Amino acid sequence: MSTHYDLRCRIGPQMGTLRVRGEIHIPVSQTKFLFVLNRGLKWKSVSQRVEDETHPVSLNRTDELVVPRFYNGDLWALETSTELETKQKQTIIEFEYSGQIHPPRKDSEMPQMGYIKRDFVELACYSAWYPVPLSMETYMSYQISLDGPSDWTWDANGECISTEASVWTWEQNRQVNDITLVGMPLHDAHIDSESFFWGTKSMVGSQKVFDKDIRKLREMLEEWLGPRGTEAPLRFVITPRQQGGAYARAGMVIVGGGYPTETSLRNAVLQAICHEICHDWFCKASPMTYDNWVDEALAEFCSTHIVNDYVGDDFLTSRIEKARDQLEKAGDLPSIRSLVRDKDESYAAFYFRGFLLLNEVADSGEIADFRKVIGEFARMCTQSESITSDMFLDLIQKKLGKKPRSMMENWLDHSGKGIPE
Image 1: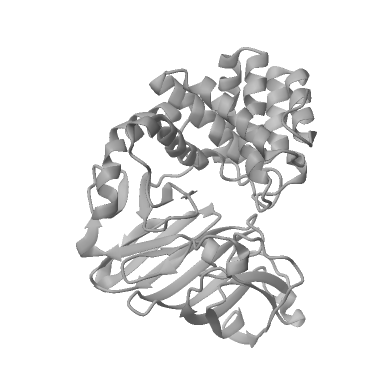
Image 2: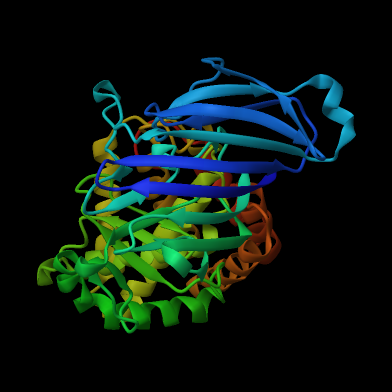
């Protein structure tokens, strides 16, 4: 299910306030929807528009489903009038809300991934700053208009089409799984069209050492995997957040705290950077199903192999050994098929076991043939609305035969310690 968001926002960094008026166009005619909204944001009005008429809706907080831990908000059930169901082919919800972005509850043990502060703004689905559909399978296009301080600069995971009168406007016509917005005071902003990095001068200065590497690694990835799954320029947004790591959104990689610059960590950092770039190809595997292992394992596999091609130093062997060690430390794990991204065990299962699975298949035949299939699958991913594990396994069987697929099925079903014997 794809939706379209039209959001008109006002952000006050000095007071940490957010006000949003908007519409959601849902291309199905149904009567009930579930959304997550940050606990610090309060609804002012919600209604349904049918042609030129506005109709009331029922909006109630609910616990009928468990909100995934990575969403920081309450679950709301919105029900429209049943008699309006057949009058139009899509449902249009109008709304207004305002307030502040509250951090996660202390007992959640989750990092604060979204905030509005005097010196920086970082907003994504994790902070539920917009009504987030409960299922990340819901992809969206959007248009945002942002009214903020005149002396700030902003960016989003869409195309900026206007900055007139301090009102920034972005469009995203492709289907994406989030609406991400970042901003900072202009006087403190690092602005360099030749650099991949975006953020405050104090945080970005040290990161520019990676610009040359990123340019070459991106070129190598595109030669292998084809054009990235977005036309947006690649940029790395360095935020002051110290926890929560990095996440990728349609060409924009958000990095909490930046990357370490010690020489001894260079190869590992390049692999981490490449991993995030790789999500531009594989990100359409839903984190609400086990299919997400495809995204994470392929991002890990492709980034490791490309960095090994780039730096040598037997990097691939060291990463395989590290993955084995980390998987051993993780102890008993459920099978990959039984996990979703929200589960604690999914990290070790998807990143380590999934990465080792792909290397095992590569080593069972000609690695050049396997890499060629990965490249073909990457091109398939950018042309598809969503990707699944079965799509990947079907292509493996078609190109490499039944034996590699059978091996992968065995790994995906394996539970317990380590890898299948």
